[in-house]
Image (cartoon, rainbow, N blue to C red; front, side, top):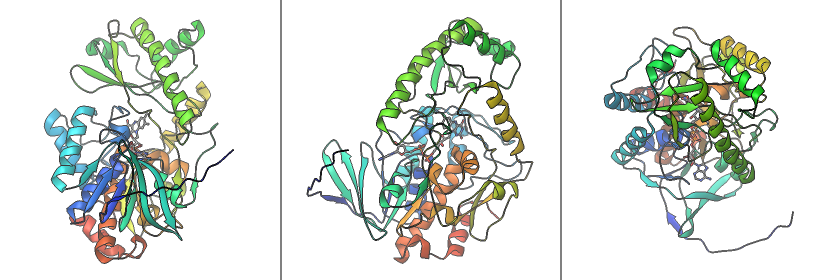
Length: 441
Ligand SMILES: Cc1cc2nc3c(=O)[nH]c(=O)nc-3n(C[C@H](O)[C@H](O)[C@H](O)COP(=O)(O)OP(=O)(O)OC[C@H]3O[C@@H](n4cnc5c(N)ncnc54)[C@H](O)[C@@H]3O)c2cc1C
């Protein structure tokens, strides 16, 4: 491919102690935690809202936040959940999922960021990383006003895709596109009769009725893509429900052409599913899709290789680590790359086989946040150093809060001590995380 070399003077417009790129659940937890420790924190996002996938991609439900006994994302996660429950009045301490109301969540996140004194910038897309000999000198952003640079003591990668780390020269892994988890454009539904829906008994690939209805629709062509993995629709207020339905396969989240294809295909599929629900699903005869994600819901892209890679054996052994900064317990939820019924059965087997019992969880070592080959950088959220199995567990929102909170605390300590995140006193980090409610052994 033809290349160009382009030189330009770029203003260093911000000089925070800690620069967090990406305001998803991981990046927000990192920014708030670091700012509360007294660090001057800048949080930048390419998009126009906080929350990443959890708001912009309209993810409908929060995955487990307890192990049945302990509150796993203690600290930042507990605050978000408490504020959310105070608004919605919903509480389910037993485990899985309070429904996510994107508008409420955006406000909660922005309140937390403002109260902590984080400087927040939307419309700021990471465009380049200026790194030399494993040290990030500046990160560079494209905004409506042009390019600007940020010089910080410590950088935190909350992009989900690990873009800061990869562009700074950290090694990473990414599944081949014929194996990578499919993406989903989540949707917002209104005009349903929820009681009739619940009485109807057709919800997801896990019940008896939905698979038969789907198979019939694949046969008569009203659903054009044969996809037997159907997660379903979840009520998120009295008026609306969130759909985690449709999959687009082989999307490369680091490639604009692939992402665009994913969005266009998803919107076409959503129209088909709206018809399918109206025709087949009890309570949905008059329902309509009133909105869909402003970002494609990407489950999997780069996993940045760190000083330790957390793998399935660690998960299965419910392993403890001396540098543990959190614990988590969600099953390995690898959405199948091919939507056959056999694949869905395999998925169910893996999901069940990796489910944790009451009080069980696996440890998350600090080292998974330390990208190899780069000294002044931490990762958080879904790009931390794991194999595909642990990724498919830890990638959900409470998992991202846990790694985000730890990255923010470590970043603040490193900035304060004028050292790299790799050089901090890990026991000090653990003590400080415990003080704010972090849960680990
Ligand atoms: C379809 C789908 C369904 C899901 N369902 C659930 C569920 O039911 N429950 C649950 O708990 N979890 C669920 N998840 C998982 C969860 O939502 C995500 O894994 C989680 O949000 C990842 O958090 P993160 O902070 O790592 O990154 P993200 O949420 O991906 O946020 C990354 C942020 O970085 C920004 N960014 C990216 N690149 C750049 C750049 N170059 N410059 C500046 N900013 C950038 C983005 O705009 C975004 O705001 C689901 C995910 C998907 C995709």
